[in-house]
Length: 274
Image (cartoon, rainbow, N blue to C red; front, side, top):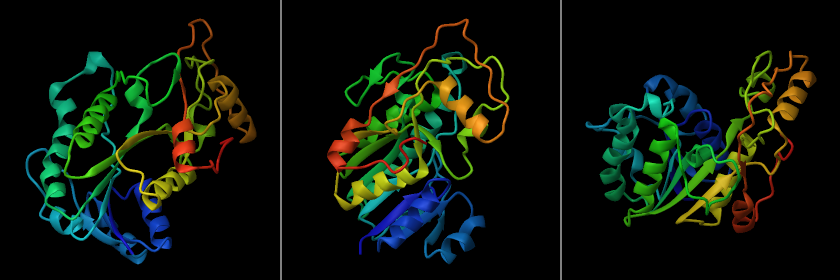
């Protein structure tokens, strides 16, 4: 079966790697250190310690990509902040790391790249959003993700699909604990845009097995109650203190549609009601 390289075997990448192994794929996986080598290799994943740099390159990148037809980039930019915190150096760091990676991809056997992005690229739109909506990111991570999306999609050496996930939940990311006990929480009437790890993996498997490349997809469960309704109910179910929302300031929030992923992949969400 085909070999796949997963850059970033973390919260999403590691369970994804195990799911792909079950489907018969051979998997190479990277982490930033050698600490997780035993954990990955016990699962049948060939481990490569790779910490992307803006200027220098790891000697393990070439063997990590060698023989793989598909590369999945599943590493977050790990930056926060609005425009007031904007820093050229901070902004460029993640972008430059991916730019530095590009020659290695171009010289490798990789034909397809799946880039895990985020609906943060849409910024603070207060409307219904789909893939035709012009991105307008306001956070550091959103700005970088959009720039990298454009960088990869414009490269003609390989095909790229961009997958924009909503808020990630599952395993150690329990939505009941996100806002429990907090006060003065903004945007009570804003819709939620979340996706469970099970569906993240299910959608990626569909993209790979049906060869859906050169496109951009939103991936958010088709379930959009208000933040107040959703997080209050989740807290009550788990016997936690419900959050207290601020209703003095009008709510701002977008509803992100995943109609394209449902139609194009014939995908049926596993965790609809989250």
